[in-house]
Image (cartoon, rainbow over all chains, first blue to last red; front, side, top):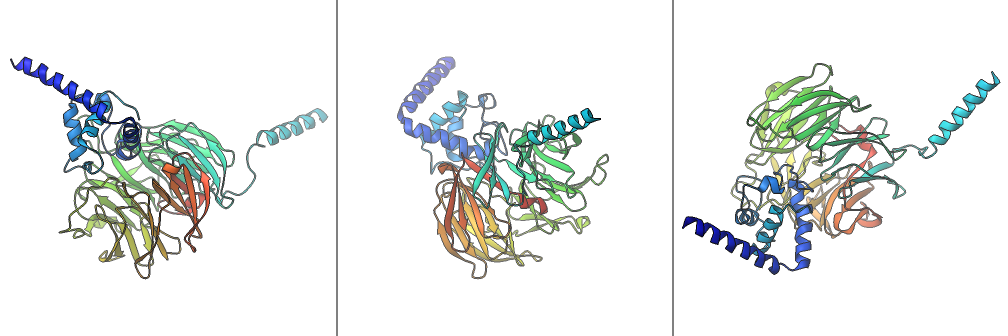
Length: 107
Length: 392
């Protein structure tokens, strides 16, 4: 039973991120990629290989789920220099960005 | 004998031709502009407002910075990916290039110009190289954080008497590295300076080293005339009782402005420029500005302060009059106004406008745009006059 739930959750998440990607129009995707490179990049490195902030490569992010990463983008990480991006990035956009990062996007 | 003379003259002619590509001129009115996304650098003539060379192949130049040899001919570029590149700006060529670390954050040149120190995030520590050929002279690992990682090093500057000073981000320390005898580096460690120092500056006279702290209020000050007294916290009360805003770009302290006996610095998490009295280090005033300041830079004569801002306000530059402490001009140069560099005597300021792929030049007396230069995703601008300034 727990396994079924896990599978269903995974399916749901997969379905929701697929739906989410469709919700972010291509022009906004391009803006988010630009933001990722130049603004996230000022701490995480323009190639996302790390700086004062950690690397955002698929390998480094492997232990974390898309939801956790999206939440981190939206809320920031209190006690660290990671700020909340809520004023500039919506939740579906954060989901899309997190999915891209998990897939190893190179902006 | 005649053959000998012929050979000699042929040799001279050849060497003359070989260097024909190089410029024959002084370098005092030259500089470089980092093209951070392309991994290239433009060498510029700052009085003619034009590019002389573009040099490619410098790796990841996000957050890149540069220092100059004392003769202003060679520029040393510190890249994010650990690259250290020595450029000949008269010939527009790379003379030496090494990848000395995995992830780096700036460097400095020693007082005598013979040593280049680089600050590394990964592996955490500082490495020192010979300025002439970039051979490794000293490797100074930082304090371990755990079994795999050492503290990141930040805020590396040169100080007098062949010293380098830098801070350890994770462990909250400031180290003085004395390279008087390159074979025997001497380290003096100051522990518990405060939480998460993220950048630092040294005053132009080389006396005060000040580290900004991310993990707590205040800054850690070290008087290099009296290092035995250790660091002390200054401006501890700054921002108390006021809601701090999220910080989307960490301020830079390198450009910390001194004008007369007053220091001007960015208020972290606030839309303010702080005015601080040097010596006592008390807050004299808080100047409300357009956004969170990143660079707060004084025109060389100290009469004006130019400020740029963090995302999302990085399309704006403000100019503050240091007598009245009022904003006298708000400029809208375009999105991504990242870096400013003054002509050594202050008549002009060059500003990188990332999203417009250009560098804009302003007349600082009229506060007007006078020139633009096409530069791909420009970030840092570094004029050769830095060669003669401590901490730059």
